[in-house]
Image (cartoon, rainbow, N blue to C red):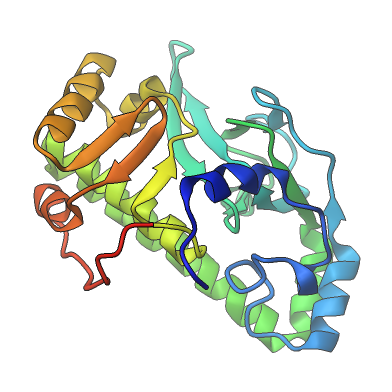
Length: 255
């Protein structure tokens, strides 16, 4: 799928609601690895909820676990609360990603999910999904892959927060978003930050002043171009080097 420009990234929040088989995300969401007939069975259990407005919650901490959610358009943040009542951001979720898997163990949501912009989701009742995955090996295998990826991402995040310096953390975060957008068929070089600088700092364990200073420094060093929420990666290899990550060999074409 060809890369798209920033206007296309923005327009993602205006996608039409369509069935799984026609959805542009069907290769990166649950339906991977199942055939057309099985896809219809999965589509039959999915509830396409009304869009969640910016600032609204999809679910709250302690809510009973009943479903997992696939982001169709827009974006969400998940957060826990500390003992003194402050938010601790635990993740950001883009189109094609699942939210709510961490609630399976205790049968209630350990974090809250809030929309960063108008966001459309598919609600997948977990009891129905369990029954269906027993009949569809491809679906069961995909669920295992998704859960494994969640564990891997959590481990990588622990390394970032525990061992990396401030500039390494922000660079790794920007590269991670780049990789996630590329996987969805969008430009890995240009994208919008739907989350606030404050939320980024909260997630990375850095002060807002530090985040602002690093964005300015990265721009002055020619690594990125910043225009409010719009980010353009100008030198991905150097940004990877700053993050301490190995840079995949992509064709260096900016769109």
